[in-house]
Length: 576
Image (cartoon, rainbow, N blue to C red; front, top):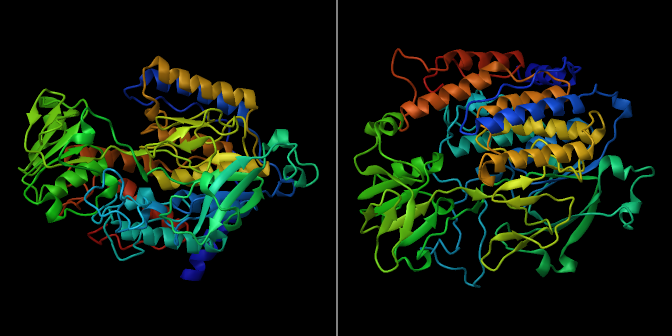
């Protein structure tokens, strides 16, 4: 069975790509920024007209030397697609294993919000990449989470729940790396310290193969790295020992360093002198009794992590207040959040407005002041950072800020908006030799990683053409203008939601393929409906005699996997 599975999957990968007719622009998705969606749809239509071209023959394609930064879920997908297209790939991974954020790490950081942890003996700041807590479970069913090339319709680590734990996801990523034979491409314990574009007149750039077309392919890149490093070291380009580093030249760089590692912490009056414990969810691992037992805890942020932590801590705390900016008690919010499913020790509130400097009290948006607060946990997300680009330097407070004169080939970062970018992937000035995988959020990440990576791999080989640099820049600038016109905060620039499915299909069409199967969008939307209805139990299987609300999509996913030659868990397994 294993041999036939491999043969079937390999045959599928080797089959010619279907080149469909030009698709219509994806429909605008209802959201709080509907005008932006309408504008984006019109630019998507322009992009399709400019970028569509038939795939060229394999004999006419270029094989590039490509550096991939990071061997998490995005980096593995990039490695798979680049290898498949015939490129020479080197994946740099600072830790000792593949899997990125899904590699659970019991350690926590010694930053300014981790004052309940002992400092390092030498006074340095340790950096922990993973933000996964011990009890975390996926907030999407495994079937929809899986890569299209490697279905997630069975267990790889013994956890058969549809909404599985982090160990199961990590086992799945390990299996993905083995199935596609990616481990030989990965250089573990190797940290990229500097990545910079080379000028066409640079001596190293002139070593490029004869006939290298800088105008077409963009700049080549110098990548400086250190081997056998501890992934917690806070090395920076300014403190490098040249004897301990190596610089290699690559035709292209694909950035897959993830964006769930550097905490974002809001600023409030008197925050530095507030007497209670403040920490970011990045440093949370479990509801330790000595930290939360019998205490009053405020959790700021009602995303997946904020809700999970609130529910878990409510089991040991005296009271938990789940706070979120803009939230207000009403018949609608009570109904939407199914408040009656929360434990009695948990209540909701608007966002924080003030921490009182000499008292254990916190004031919220509705004017209510809570006293005797012991702990504030910021489940407020993460900052997008690229510490290996010289366009970003570390500020005095440890935060990454832009240098005064960043390289134009490298996009800037403002409040998590990476710009300018063509379709969230290519910087106009350096495409296709610089690209980014995994910037969009509120998406199903793994399958989108493969789609973005496939587009990158084909662009680097010359199999598909990108629009001209001027057209890509006009599109990117127009997207920023739409943000500003609609008063949208920069950090929402890469947020997709339902728009992800039109985006994925558009990229696949440009790659000469049909779009993703419809069951993926159906399963995603049904999970969202279920979560809003029963936020504390949406991961749990239905009762005896009942079925999942996405039963049709679940069966379609398993049928697709079987058609590809992959093994499924038995349908009657109650966990599935």
